[in-house]
Amino acid sequence: MQSVEEIAAVNDPGEVGRDEHNKGDRLTVLISNLFAWIFPILMIAICAQVFLRGAGMNQAWLDDFQWWLYGSAVLVGIGYAVTTNSHVRVDILYDNFPDKKKLRTEIFALAWLFLPFIILCWDVTIHYAVASVVADEGSDSPNGLHNLWILKIMMNASFIIIGIAAWSAYVRNLSKLMKPTLSRQLIYAFPSTMFLINLIAFYAIWWFIYLTSPADTTAREVGRSAIFDEFEVGVYDIKYTIVISLVLTVLVIGAARFLDRAARNDNAV
Image (cartoon, rainbow, N blue to C red; front, side, top):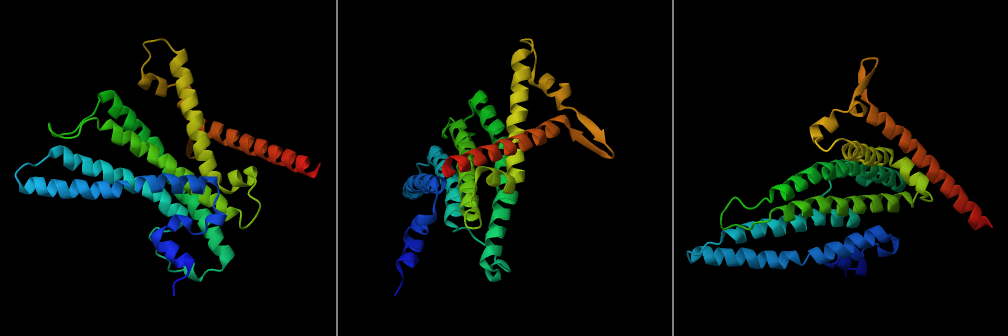
């Protein structure tokens, strides 16, 4: 006879290990459960299009609608899979690791490999979405589903959801090894921390230069500002913004350690 845990793993994986979930985990599960209702709508859209096409009344907008539904549901589903650990795994070595080594592997995979990739995806697709909004992009078909920019904004937003899911899963795993203070979270996810701070610093500098420059200054001219140049260190070329980001990352981690120490002192009192 199946246990309650085994039944839940099939019917509602989001309830498995709920006691260990943090707020980010529960938010991801909530959003994903809402988006799961897209799949019945997708099935209806597919069946309707098959019927209409067979009757000689093909609807191009239904084809586009199917891709909109499928793309949105699948992208949000990635975050759900990360939270529930229900994604496809090729565990040749991992299954035989001791528990602590499994946790360290999960932490490394989430914070050093997966999360930086998600941050990169967000950075790429934000430009993709903005360009689509500016162009008021629509379907290639005259009878298709227009306002394609809605889907591209959703694509960019989905990477924020995936990022929340990845960070929450990382913190949940870290808490099984040590108390996940803010400074420890930032240190043990150093590549993700620095990458995110680098993006914030880059855009802050870019917009500051753009907004304080003459009105006829173009985006290309802003990108050619001296602050975005490189300097040589031996055989390497390093961007000034990278150095700025490294310094800011160290300062942010230092500030987090100060806050953690202050919190400990308050609790001690």
